[in-house]
Figure 1 (tube, rainbow, N blue to C red):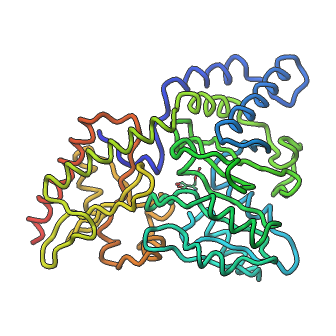
Figure 2 (cartoon, rainbow, N blue to C red):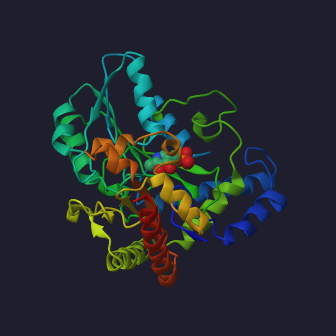
Length: 385
Ligand code: PLP
């Protein structure tokens, strides 16, 4: 099996299994209890927080450990809402765990702005500048698009926030950025940054929200008051430790370079087999078109002219190559809001699949995947035409 759906989830590192055993079967103590063992576990969670803050390049703040990035995004946005004449700003390319919260705020009568995306998939900075003002309460813009891989410029967004609405809260959904794209939060004005362990080889069910100023966030539910009262509930100690293990095994700079090399092998193999770049489509001819937005090396789109993406997905699945149709949450719905937003036409969207790599694939695997994809496409094309 060749797995090319790493933006959806990744294979957990084997090294996490031992950590799971240690913190579930041996050091299973509740970090809020008062025994010496519990205090030690509580201290390990504090160390984990410091470790992750360092890896985020943050010079201040805290990490809230949660269950998934969907929870982080809901907490970050709903926990920043205040009554009064405030405005809320979102990019039009956000994941449903942000976008649907924005829609809900709108339905509740809050003033919500959706900033359009440019053709390259990044948020349009001029449009962003035009909606920010001293009533802006929250700006929520993702780091890396899960659909296109486009990377938003967090420094430029921070500069706009500082110039136009310094009191606003800046939330960034960093799910496709953390542990993949080298950056440091201290170079930005980001207040809240969401990440999710299963996107970088940790188990599912553990995630984190960076919070620069914990006094500025309101909790969504009541409970035992763990994690500064912002996320009550017994911490997933094993998950936290496994996530730290995974982080300690990742060198994001080296992985970024390796994934660039992987993408190049993949695209060169496709081009060699007759694919074309998106802009080089030939009227009247049918090809695989490589729709690489030039952002994250981890993600790109392929457009199969004349064949539905879903048909390709199932045909590839049958021969052991797993690809995606975009975010798992939208994969079961028709169309793709984000690709539509950047101006792709409906037929092109229907013919698209999302390819997402991990840094640990071998050259041979990547090369083989591209050859199989080309062959399966040619076979289907011959059958349908
Ligand atoms: N945000 C982005 C950009 C994502 O890609 C995803 C998952 O695909 C999420 C949020 C949701 O993450 P989780 O599965 O941890 O809730």
